Length: 367
Ligand SMILES: Nc1ncnc2c1ncn2[C@@H]1O[C@H](COP(=O)(O)OP(=O)(O)OP(=O)(O)O)[C@@H](O)[C@H]1O
Image (cartoon, rainbow, N blue to C red; front, top):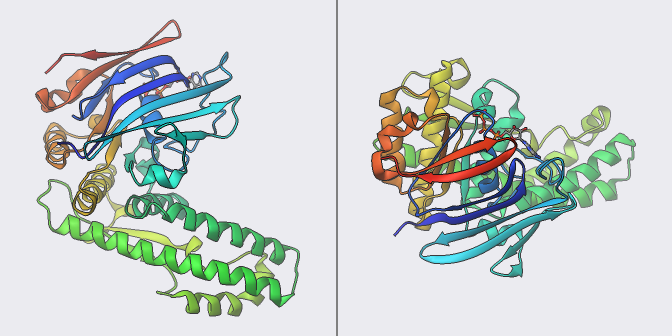
């Protein structure tokens, strides 16, 4: 029995897909088609079945099919540990995204307890090189896969911090307001830091314990020091004068960075070759998946956009073997079916077409 997969996906007026439907049996899903056919749009649709803003962090309006549609709708059946959950996600008139689970209004947290989705997309190719924000987001998605409530704790922290920053910008000096906000930030902040440490430890163990063709990536949090709630409360209070001068909060988990090292070579990830940097990310996603499978009995759904084309045939075969061993429904894209031959009959194949502005998704029997 497969632990978690999307068995049915229906898209209406979603990006380039006016109406498309797919039935999946839990095997990896290989999507092929020309550039611009709408493959990544399908991966983005799947990413919305997990908490957060989805793979492209797009607004509901951006995802509305141009030029004619006034909203969009996704319907999916998530099979989780043998049980079906029907999820409907939609936006009317480009307004806020709405969610219904099994026919009832539901929270993102409820969805996160069923659907864990991890992704690797071309925009992450420069993850190790560019600013800390992208790495922090990668880290927090990893953390959220273990602790679905992490997203809400982060929102609580950010909301209090925004209010504190407003006080700082206005050069307010009334200690009472600072203390109240800092208490909220310290409680949420300590939880964020603890979640991150625990999640990283799980991923590190899953990398160490497995046989894999991908290199081990040692990860370390770059932050001032390990702090509990009391330490953070004291640190925020002590930092007020400096923060007032800067007009914003200079310390706290919103400043944490993630440092990655190619362990066997002892080379920082940012100094590795392009292929090695990608291999390190694949290794982390696979390890994250193995840890989730152990902890929750189900591997996550994986979205691997344009990954196959960047691997040599040996590594590609290794990736497919590892995805199948994990039992994950990996959604993968490529321009042609030849990129997936190493899967043989272990994957489901779909051709994505966009002809004269009308998209179509058709299952193909390739093997
Ligand atoms: N809101 C929208 N409404 C209509 N079409 C859209 C919308 N957003 C994006 N598109 C179209 O979707 C297409 C891109 O789709 P997608 O990124 O899924 O392509 P792809 O098959 O992954 O291609 P590639 O192989 O080049 O990565 C583009 O033609 C783009 O104009």
